[in-house]
Amino acid sequence: MQIRTPYLIFLGDVPDRLAAKTGQGIVDWRREWCLGQLRLPGCGAGLGIPDLTIQKAAAQGARTLIVGVVNAGGFLPDAWTATIVEAIEAGLDVASGLHTRLGSKPEIAAAAQRHGRQLWDVRHSDRHFETGKGAKRPGMRLLTVGTDCAAGKKYTALALEREMRARGFDADFRATGQTGIFISGRGVAIDAVVADFISGAAEWISPAASPLHWDVIEGQGTLFHPSFAGVTLGLLHGSQPDAFVVCHEPTRQTMRGVSHPLPPIEAVIDLTIRCGAVTNPDIRPAGISVNTGALDEKAALDYLKRLEDDHMLPASDPMRFGMAGIVDRIAADFPATLSATAG
Image (cartoon, rainbow, N blue to C red):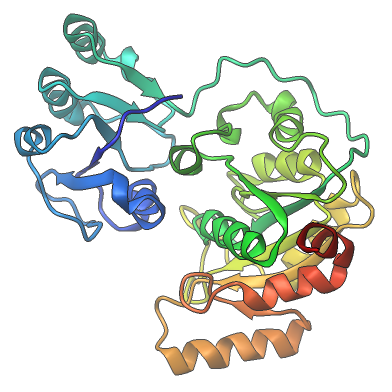
């Protein structure tokens, strides 16, 4: 992909911040690419960047309208078509990470053809994936897992990559969702892969590498979610992680979109080890990453300390306190992968 920057982030009329997590992720990790946001009446989310009309964004040099939202089923509402067509007519390409292809809307397809504009559907890949083989391959891998969807797995993986590189590790972020692909420029949206090939796609994302190289793989869903556990399990088997970090949001009572309660962190650790051992018997936890945004600083630090005491693992908020403690644990558990690259 060569999606043109800078971006105008389109949020439509989504109800809350979590529904705008694609746009928020791009802003948080690629702020220099983002000119502003476009919101329709009734939108309940904001990214902390200027509100712009399509005309103003085009005049300031915007090149691509990014559909910066997620929703259950990944559909593109018909009510947004006119806005997308308007952006195309103003000279912008359009990129989306939804399941619905932009070109499946006749008005959008016709406008793009008429004006010579590019439509990017980053959730869809034309690559053919093999079924997963499960054979041990060289290289080191870390996977972020969660107690729920939208619990910080992408942010944790990106923050770990940054901290690991700063320490001298040979580490690369591997995107498995549409936002990660927008941020990194590569990857595959694992939830859009046919079920038989999910583990194979995960193997393709994190192929055989130097024994000292770390792939830091963005997790998806949770093994406990009745809607998405199949994707999570295939990603776990295919990525064959040596280490994993559990991601958690402490104020939720039920998993997103369903009435099932959040599983305990210890249950996630236990089930991840038991399922992950199918392709890597040496899998182990490296830490706990917590989104403490709803807690004040003292409450957040107290909560993290309790988690560390209860689970004997480092715990931190990647955006608030950094990943130093968890990377300390990785360095202690896998010292050769640090010393060989840093020395």
